[in-house]
Amino acid sequence: MPDTTWADRVAAATRHSTPRQVGAIPVLYPLLEAMQVRETINALRWTKADVDLGRVVEVLALNRLMAPQPLSHVGEWATQTVVASMFGLRAEQLYDQRFGRGLDELHSFLGRAWVAIAARVVQQEGVDLSVLHWDTTTIHLEGEYDDSELAAYGRSSDNRFDTKLVKVGMDVTSRERIPLLYRLLNGATADITTPLPNLEAISAFLRRPECASLAVRPLVVGDCKMITPAAVAAAHLHHLYYLGPWETNTAVQAVVRSVSDAELESHELSYRPKRRSPADRPFVPYRGVWRPFPVSYEGESYPDRALVVWSAGKQRLDADKRKTHLKALLNRLADIRDHLNRGRYIRREYTAHHVALAQRGNPAKGLVVVELTGEDHQLALAFHVDREALAQAQALDGKYLLGTNAPHMSADEALTWFKAQDGVEKQNRTLKGPLQVQPLYLHTDERIEGLVFITFLALLLRAVLALRCRQANMPSSVDRVLRSFAPLYTTDQTFVDGSRLTQLGELNGFQQRVLAGLDFPPATRYLQPILG
Image (tube, rainbow, N blue to C red):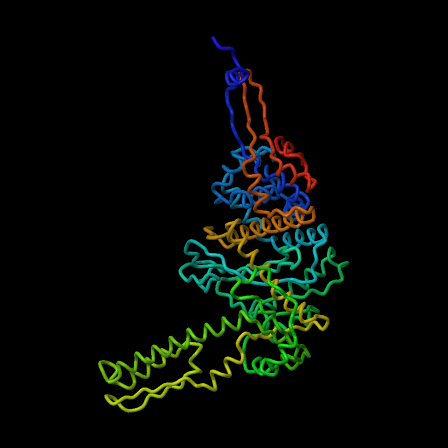
């Protein structure tokens, strides 16, 4: 008979063995504690319930970061991880209606909660508020939402029209990519209406006691929907700087045309994109020249300026787009001419209607001279490219106008800050990707707003983790850090004599370096209930 091994003895003595995921808790929960999320929520809404609202928010935020689930599955997830036990919670306390009611309760004060938490992060982490990026995105909803004030059909950022949606506006700091402020909007809200409330919110945030000592006048960077005369006036009113591209109009074109190609060629900019240019198309430096660009609004005039920018890549893109649109228009007109005086095209009214349809919405329609002559049965259609109009359009290729009221900004800085706008766009992608905020299927506007708050809290936590990693000289991305901790489990063993043992899996070298580099507590901390 072979000797009995220790493995045999342990197996014989074990009654139950239950694995539970520790996952990324060791790198996430210390940040939740530092941000004082639970304390902030409970200070705004204290409850005598056996599970306080701040704890509910912590559970939901951790779930959103580790394994996003519908509310009905969050409780089960918590018990399959160390989340329930480290908070001293039982499975029967984590039912879906508790989380739903928690989102309802958050609704009345989530705005105050957010700015309090965000301001604390700014203070604790030394966040640079000198440059902010503003952008909007959309979140798809599943369901009818007939009584909703938020859900509406509108144009989504991915050009879907088949579902209702809500719109989210977000300010992100340029240097650290910290989501500073956000606003939840009706899905049909026009982007052009969003800058004024956003500038007011930034101004109010800067007046908070936590920000009073910063003495900062931020530069707010946005796209062409943000740069309007009304927004410019609001920026001056709130003592904020702005930067963004003006939409093309007659005044904008006049300023762009005032800069000759020779002047642009003598003003190369130092900005270089991070991506490498292909070998067959070497990088051509951007060029930029300042011009005065006064802005008038409601009787007031603001002596601002604008940078005329030329981009080789945009020049190719503009030329290719025009070629595509021009070809489509000419082909359609030729098709109409081929059918002339046959079938329905014997009628002038019908033919004129289809000529108008061919031109409608085509950006190249101003480049083609079209003449329909004759009466029914004797129609003639002539068209040709207007070479003068084409030359004028080609002269604008690759050029755009960046407006600003910041007198201290150099041309290089203006282009660099504008190109950094992708920081907020990357946070938008994180919102819809790793945090899986869409599609939403919730019953009320209150719960939509509550879950968006939780998701932005998770986004803020991710951004702070990324900042801490950079400060610790760890080049790893947040996604890699979170993935590396996902396989970390603990095993709960119950033996035949009733004794119990909880054992943590062995941390690999990368996990150990992350915890040491961030100066976070050991992972064993989360195997027992956390006091408080």
